[in-house]
Amino acid sequence: MTQYRYVGQSYSQGTNNHVLYSFVASARDVMKWAGVPSKTERFHGGFQRALSSRYTKIVQYFESGQISPGAIVVAFRPTVCKISELSSPSNWPSDEHCTSKPKFVQIEFASTDYSSTSVYELASLVRDLLQSRPGLLDTESTPIDFEEGSEDAGNIYEKQTVAKGDDEDEDELDVGRSKLRMFYDFLGSKEAISDWLRNENEKIAKIKLKKNPSKSERDLIDYSPEEKLKSTCISLLRPAMLVDGQHRVNGANESEVKNVEFTVCAVHDANWVEQVFQFVVLNKMARSISKDFLTELLNSSLTNIEVLEIDRRLDAIGIRNADRIIHKYINHDKRSPFAEMVAEASEVSGADRSGKLSQQGMIALAKRWKAIAGGKKSAEMNMFIKYLSKSSLSETRVAWANVEVWIPLFFAFWSVIKEKYEPEHIWVKNEGYNLLKIVTLQALQDHFIESKASGMIKFQNEEDFKEQVREFFQAVPASFFQNWNATGLQSGDGWQIIKDAVKSLQSGERLLSIQKESALWK
Image (cartoon, rainbow, N blue to C red):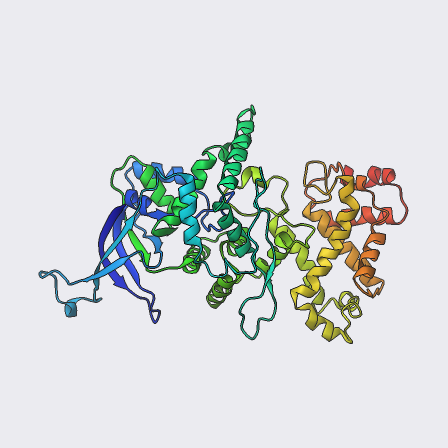
């Protein structure tokens, strides 16, 4: 264990009582005591992005003699820092002669070198650390029973009622707690860790046999599974998290320049929510992070109790992400026909994202149902008055504001489609199969909704709704969705081209003749 001591200044901002510190530290030291909580195959709770190609450019930047005067931001875990006030040196000017009154402090903390610690010992230490996360170990949570040879922990996607304000009356899927609980239980099982390491090594061995592995596959084998898991655990055990500046610090550390120092802006006693909040604020406001990454970050890095806290704080500063809840339902609700089929913005994206659906595309697909309550869609909203046992259009619109009213219809619609086409082996996101292209999904559901609304249909109940979906697509064979030649369907007339072809089938035209005429096969 190494003790680190720095002299710096303490200060606060405005009326906020959170204490901040500024001091100077070398990149090499920061790399020894600050973790980088990136998402990995096993740990979905991380919130940093993986190092990009920009990292190698920064190495070259420092080696060419350039400087980077910007501060890096770190967040120290609660209770790890000892702060001692220091008086000003005797030969310094008195406080009244200073434009800003300084408050000098000594920042002291310890960091352990875990490089020789086994992955199993690290797992036990991290497991102890995770126990403090609020809501993680609720009594109703069921520990995961790992099966021999299982690669995954078996998802626990359950509904949890949490303490809410007066204006929050709906339960929410606690994906964050589920994924953290999966990781927590995984770390507590030596058999599960060993099985995962073996399976990952077998996957890497197969990739190494390929003559021309893809870039994503090459990225996957850069480090061994044991190195990745150890790196994740060590990052979580470090006294501080590197919230902003990971590229600069890594670049400086890897360069041949011996002593690259940075101004460090440190947040004192920062819990996990504070660390995530600062990451979002710094990266969303300074250089925008992707919607996918932000959505998955909030979903998988925090438990529901923590999400409630950070949502309010982000909303107060104008960062809103309503897509987060919709994505939870689409990808993490066991009722969803698309569960676990949507790409997640995790660190190891490459090989694990193949065959996955676009997150933003799927959110847009679901929002088509949410939009039915819009003021210009009275005919569409009228279809569900009886279905929801309401007496008026206005009552139906009010009810529709609850996601648990319209999302089951989204699930029901696509569950029928899945039941019809999955046995035909086309419910897949592969080359030559076009059903699960976002543009196809959008065209199919839009065609159904518009057709039923124009016919002034009123759905009686869920079974009536499902039966009408079955009948609507009865004339559309699985072979229709295969081997299209058209590209760029997402733009221009793509939707209409698909709709027109489906309409032709529904009117009795044979698929062979449609293939000769439709732009889908030209």
